[in-house]
Image (cartoon, rainbow, N blue to C red; front, side, top):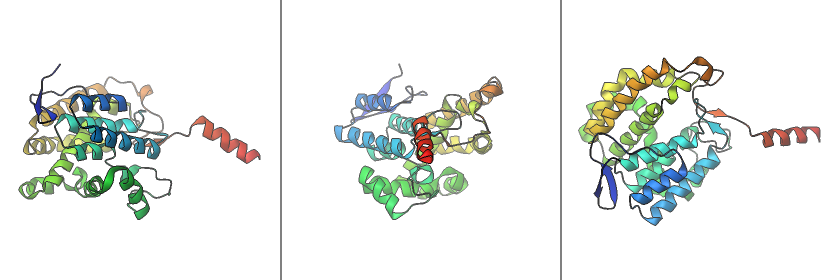
Length: 257
């Protein structure tokens, strides 16, 4: 097991590898308990996860994994990197305004109703981070961030680290090989990988940059080995909604009635 160095009540990674990243809510809570996070923080993370279960119910990634696993893994990564509690909570729900299903028929927007629901669970401080996250995402700002790095606020630096963790997670377990179409991610990360590694180093986490570079190379090799029959159907790229059978039955019964 890799050595973790304790800084206050939060553990962080000292060498080139991290502990296994959590993939389930139980694994994440176990990790945070081992790190000595407070009971208040544990409850906040638990509530944030519960919100994702509601807003991503029936949603799966393009590789077939339940979408809630993604937020768990991103939160696990930033926790292992010794990030503060607010960022761990934010990581669980990091792009909820972009792809969460609030049942309002809207896409990729922030509305007062949505914010009221999110703030009731995660609080104003974390919601402010979520709103800012939309502005600093790497796809929108990578070159600008590197050019103006010294002027970045501490919040922006933490959010950029969270976005690196977001991209890292998608390559971590070979998942992209199982997407119907993973070009949307590969075509961005591969040509920009040197810049992303540089950003990790400048953020003070060179080990994340090295591991990111390693998993991208491994992923590209692995994609040559996974047969096409294991890729999700219909060229699925990102979020896929699957209606539970009970809902289909209820809809059929309503139509008959």
